Length: 613
Ligand code: ADP
Ligand code: MG
Image (cartoon, rainbow, N blue to C red; front, side):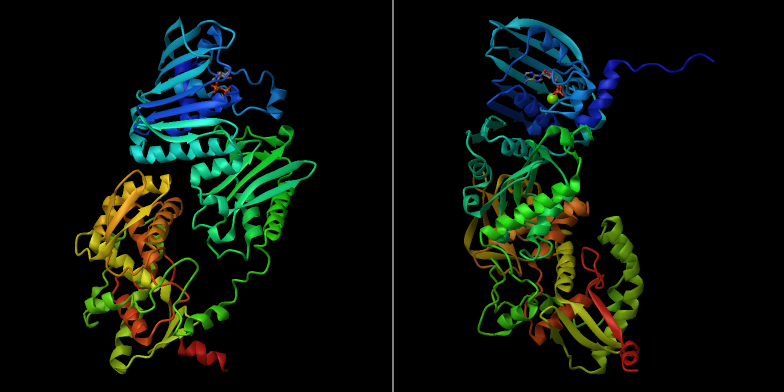
């Protein structure tokens, strides 16, 4: 047999490497910005067109390249940043693998103009799919100007894999933010489709954060400062009351490099424990500085993962630094969220409206009126449950499907029970426990319903129907309301705007990040807090996207249902409880919340009598 092993041609090797380093336009943006930083630039301009698919251009006033470097930089493992293996253990630059430009060049057309400050004339290089087409002298300013055109044009499978321009833009914005926060000492300009969207002047970290996230962040931030021999921690956390439903605003930087670390996130979350409600996340912008020899950045091609020599030590330092600063700024300790009973007392006082933090609730509003009137007497509750229908209507993720499998079996047990109970004694009995559970006797014992999950289920099915075109109940606002969103939210809203319109929102853009709402889905009763309502829906969507990988429509519906459902802590009248239970059992899958959690449970008479033995 003849020899079969051959070395891959460079162009193929580069394409393979590109698959690792450049997943989407945002990865190219990250690499180019990092190169400019490594070149010592203090002014960087980023231009993108069509979500980076048509053009990504980065211009800097850094060191520039010599004529021969300008040709060499596209070779694989061409780097000026390390020369020997030992350097790998003391990385002072953002790049070091010498793969980025080679990878980008393998899958695009590049024009590079660059000049060092010593040279009178610069160099212009054209590259097409790794091949240098031409290289000539060219007058240009000192620094580097690199344009990446038609990314993935020669790898159609990858190009087709890209998402809409809006989605890609959002990813780019995320990378841009990470780099911009890491380096407030550099000024940035960001143009999207010829429009200047960011002008970030040099300043301190706080100024950088506020120019990216809005001036109201000025009051939200608490400084963190801690120095040990091995590690320095500095930056800001957001005050506990500004914690969010997603981890979107959690930023860790190690030696000015953005990194991802669930372990270290946990350290901060631990410091916030007891200060913020469960399933919300503190915001933070924390900078760790340590001797480069203490860390290994070379664990992953995208360099966002990092290994510390002593990770547990780092964890402890972060946790105590954050705790100390929370204490110093009087937000800790002893805000107790476990006092359910105190909370109960406030809201059972009928004269006081319910006011969970920051959300307005109209106490006279009956969230079930809607469902109740549309509910058809409960004649054929069991008849409506059809496993096939369920399968079609909820093309949910695997895990949810799994639980729905169980659902169908159990439904047939519970629903007849419910039916009979109603016939047994026309009068219903409902009790509310800790403003959270609804208790009601059924034939086999006692049923306990989680009010929030039950209502989520009811709304989820209602919206599923209305998006399928059955009826989009909409309620006109007396006074149209304007809401302002941040950029990521704006992008996301644009992506889902058609879906939420179908659900009853009449919402239109009137400016870059401002929208006017003229109508809302029937059933929303929010006074002056539509802004929060929309923000929260968008946050839910983002969170679902990460955790459940729903299709877009299901995600929107699930998020809306979650936002509008009656919450734990809301006192309900017996009539409301009864209406909710009726609507729940008119659902196709009453047993599980849209996220697949149990909605109800039955404590059987036997179980109860066992306890009295
Ligand atoms: P790495 O950054 O890992 O060294 P890259 O492929 O990103 O690898 O870049 C290769 C080399 O090209 C760099 O080491 C640097 O010498 C040079 N280079 C790239 N971008 C710039 C820039 N904006 N200014 C000056 N030199 C640059
Ligand atoms: Mg690089």
